[in-house]
Image (cartoon, rainbow, N blue to C red; front, side, top):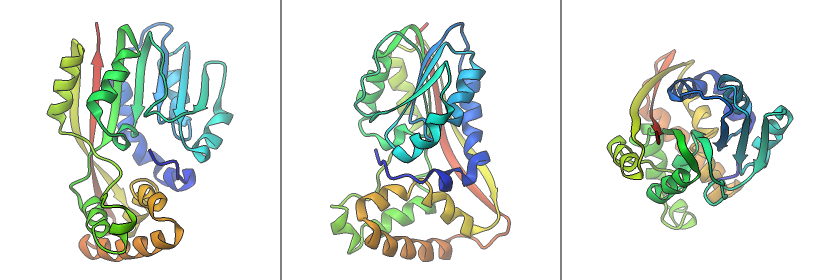
Length: 257
């Protein structure tokens, strides 16, 4: 998972990025004294909100980004703490009441093994709540993938086209069933975010999806990539103002009881 993040750029679209979080939290069943882990906690404001919303006993926010954690750690309190950790490998322990992740797990491969590990960290009445972007078929993402297949980027990326992926919703429904989640909800939701114009879409993806390319390519080559990407994408987007930016996401929740 990439650690090269710019929290300020990411939070320029704070309100829009919060929408799926609100719907994800609404799926969780609050129970007294919950112990929660938040995977990919980012700048931490939603981790604190999660603790308050569920009246949790403890919430541990994990993230690999030093920049994000610099924003998150001042938000720590008697119930919420933050640690630097690679969520792909970090041991989560066992007996948790909730494993929560908002817009992070799409960066990780092999979701069958990943979700099995998350399941193993839960107690007998545990819950899993996950939100992942699923916009990979849209111009924002296909344009980056297309460009990544061209030189000089293809060689620098060693043939990889993107840093993130998700499966179809049906695959997650089957996976939750096979892991023993006796109750589950899997939704694919398309959000419409009204942005000032198509240029704002560039700023959006520079704060999220394009960060993987920035880390892989390095500053000089990424600057060329970003310029080419911007020109190509803007030529493909309607010139509407305001711009209705559609964004597809998968929300899933499962309970073991």
